[in-house]
Image (tube, rainbow, N blue to C red; front, side):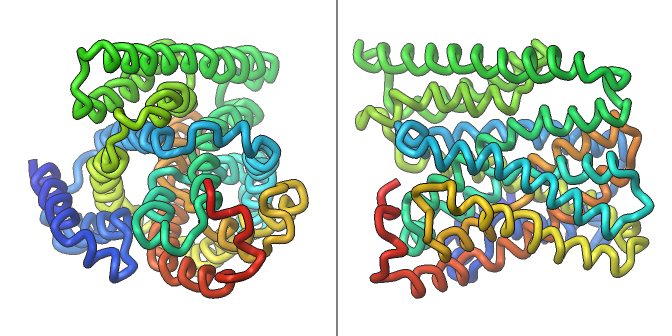
Length: 415
């Protein structure tokens, strides 16, 4: 009950002082994380720690729920034909961007943590590969982001974060198979079970279900059976239907929610009568604060301290060398951003590591019996939440100042 009390209090305060918090360049994930640390067992001890197994079960459930809401909110926010209009840029960013980020991150771990095997470093790299739609939404939404960042950059970052959350699943499981922690190392089983069944078939079925739900909503609205104010509850229900249903089918629930949500939103976003301006904001706020608050209660400070200065090296190296070089390498093959250096740099910096990494970290820790799969990613998630949270508005302003009135922003202001 103390957790529910303090989370509710924090949501109320964050809502009451939302504009003031934004003016201070503090994001809600950062605020929730700090409150969790202060109220938790490591500082004021107002919320006592329980057994680790129960804590991880609570956090994993919170992560799944939060990712589902964030992915649905992202799908509702994206323009209707974003992929068709930007297929080359988005495909290269998602596919090759993920591969580069995985290899670059793994390389950092291989250099700084020589005691780990190559496959263990690849696992750590895979866990932190996805950019996070939860944290990303706090960076690319709101009046300040709309003022300083062009629509195409905001929508590209949102789309990428939504897609690669799900695409990280087969990547993480590929390394678990290579480690022998899953399927006795049988890569043929990984291909048929994980890639074909749990992901590709999952995406096809999820698209059909999401499209069916959107069609139902549109038809009932035309028939006059629907109150437009039910869109929030309907959207939440579709997200949970996809999350819970595909979990029961032992498929990838993360990719199911985004693909299904994207199909569901196709007709919704095109229908002005069904639009509800603050639905995404409501969905995200109710789920973002709890998961980062819980994370603040569970941070493994002692294990981080044992890493010494290596922890600092990991944070700096990952934040600088995991994503920025990948985006610079991809600049020539992203037509919308070709020769737009400042735009690529801002996109390269705003690739936060958050809830998805926590989710995959917990899965990997349990399956590989590899404690560092939680310790190191949680360090990077906490650092990313702080650093990206504090730098979002200043760097958005700097980008706006550098590109205003230049060719840099040409064709980028429309999403």
